[in-house]
Amino acid sequence: MTASSHRTRIAILGASGYTGAELLRILAHHPNADIVALTADRQAGKKIGSVFPHLARHNLPDLVAIPDVDWSKIELVFCCLPHGTTQDVISALPGHLRILDLSADFRLADPEVYAQWYGHAHRAVGLQREAVYGLTEVARAAIGNARLVAVPGCYPTGSQLPLIPLVKAGLIDADDIVIDAKSGVTGAGRAAKESSLFAEVSEGISAYGIGHHRHMPEIEQGLSIAAGRPVTISFTPHLMPMNRGILSTIYVKMKGGAKIDDLRHTLETTYANEAFVHVLPHGSAPATHHVRGSNLCLIGLAQDRLSGRAILVSAIDNLVKGASGQAVQDMNVMLGLPEITGLQQEPLFP
Image (cartoon, rainbow, N blue to C red; front, side, top):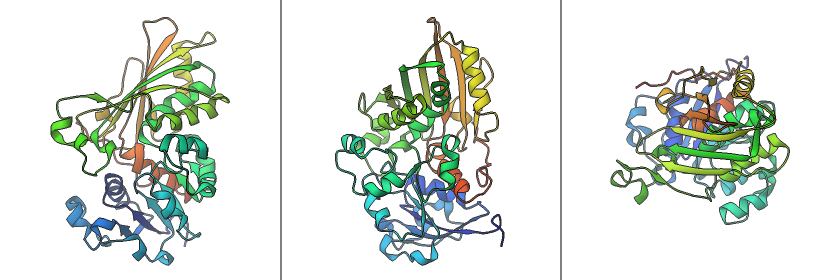
């Protein structure tokens, strides 16, 4: 059997959440994926169609509790569990499994930074050191050899893809980056929360996590690697009355005599052969509707009215490129498959 025809036996832990549902939507049409186990402790015993009616037509296994999974039948695991719980679960999994974790538990390389931002010591430091940060376009080679991949957060994906090439090239001042990002409500997860109620979200916009959002150290980690020194950014997320999407408006100061055309050339060159990251033509700016339901990241650039400054705008679907789609892209790299496999769907517009 060739690698291209092999169907990898997959388990999804936490399949009843938004990222789990999005994984099922994508993997249901993936030619190399065989979903053999789905877990959701509070929904154990139910058919997936009773939790997600839009998936009822697919022949998928019933939901079970994690202890009831027969790991001998599994090759690869997607872990969609809440932050803070994944460490213990993954630590207990058999060593033959390859794992993609969609929580934040393994994204930060430094255990002390994790403890500072998440309020408790990391309980699987050995695994944390082993984990590869799965920003596919940046860490492709390491992802291919990894056993455990930490799938990046949605805000960090939308911010790092336009910024890393420019920081690495020394075209912008890494000490003067301001990120204003706006997300749909699905970014808060599916659990019932007062702040996610329709009446709390509809017809309004709110900033949150001001000055202390947990995605800040994740973004800084990637930019610090690109700069070769510590980088601190200003980042403020906002909740928008929409289901999906992240729009990141990023304000930067150019350096070393760089011009907007230099920034554009660097981004276009960096992503010229990438399937999912595209730099828009001069004068165009992306919108969340342009990427909805797709694994795309669209990037626009503009000269600021302030001398020597530029504005970058990126758009992703927080559930696809910001979570489940990037996880499948990482899986494809891990399995030696074409990266676009299962991810060719066009955006849903309008």
